Image (cartoon, rainbow, N blue to C red):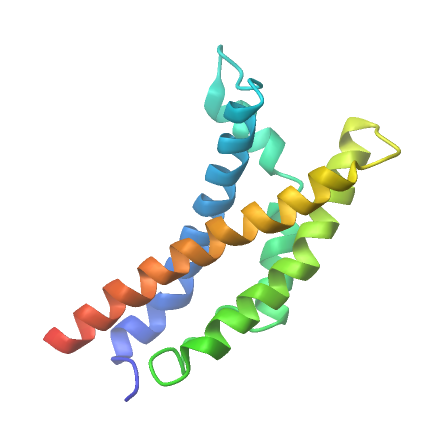
Length: 141
């Protein structure tokens, strides 16, 4: 079963917007857990802290097919596998960019593990919601 034409055109853009929001929520949660939220401008603080992760994610996601939705219904595991592969490329690049921006020569191992794991949970969690909503919408059509 293929995606309706109108949804097929907008689905990748919905996914991109949701992914970026999920990544920024991941950054906000990390800042909140470590009491690093900027009280004067929390949104700007999250955006600046998340900025090193966004370009690597966008590039890796597009290059590795994380926004392909043609097999979303019939093969959701492929959909998730492409997102996981993109995250496994983008997260380390984002961590390195973040370290460069902050002038840090070393990235703590625990930070890398937490970033990979929790970042993946945020991105994949949002994508589970997308698939559930899409499947319900498709059944109504």
